Length: 331
Image (tube, rainbow, N blue to C red; front, side, top):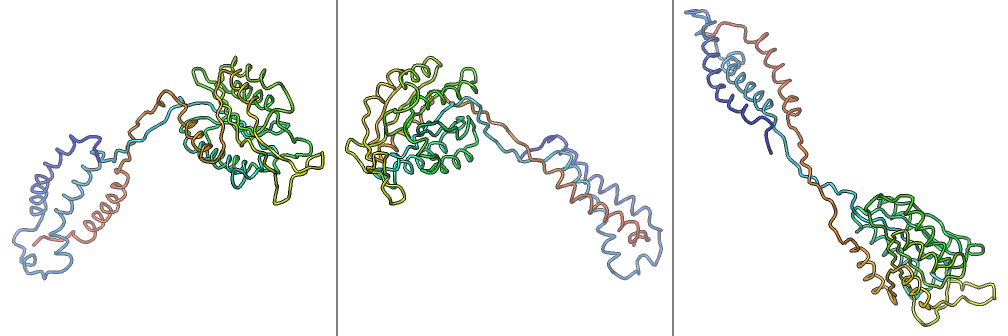
């Protein structure tokens, strides 16, 4: 609580003086020695007459309080735009349906990616989904609610695996780098997080793409998902059949992923299970090395309108009472 003009409260000291003067004025207006004044029975008018001056004093005190500007002070923290720009490049190829990360790799990845978004403060985040082709789910945005919905909407059916099946790591890196460059803000760090479970078998050379990202000032984090042992891939309970008429089997050979990270001067980590994947995302959520620009703003919520809303009908009631009820001789 606070007052915009606290010195006006000194005027409350004049309220008793007003009461004394007003009482004498009212008494002086009465007809002296009028016997009917003293013999009049006590009724509502006589009660209101005695309350006239105290009521006027109350109105005056409330008016002074309203003029003093009472308000509530709320402190609000405004987070500036000094976070990171993060591009999440997520592999949604058929092999991401492998169930070694229950319920499957893609669903586990989505859950942790959503949690990463929710803990990302004022970071701007873009999402790219890729198989053989790259699809932009969203450019950089701080609307984390929309980001959450877009990530949760990723599924096996997001792409046509007959035409877009495969893994184009180079194209994913180029698309993410280009998207970050288009929305670059001076002195703001930009990061690409590439998450995949396979080697690049389509599109541009991922090593050259990684060098392009590095020369563009991007920090690259490569995350490999999967184990060393082959895992059969099922979609909707049915085996995923390859063009060779075999059940798709997937395992992670991370040699190429390490080379991609090294070419960009970035880092590579491998997740063998959900717990390791979760720990890696926790590390990614702490990428910022400098604190955000947090400004505390004091918001004043004035009570004067509420007081005026009460004071006006009271004043109107006083005018009506004084004009139509109390205009009689005093006792």
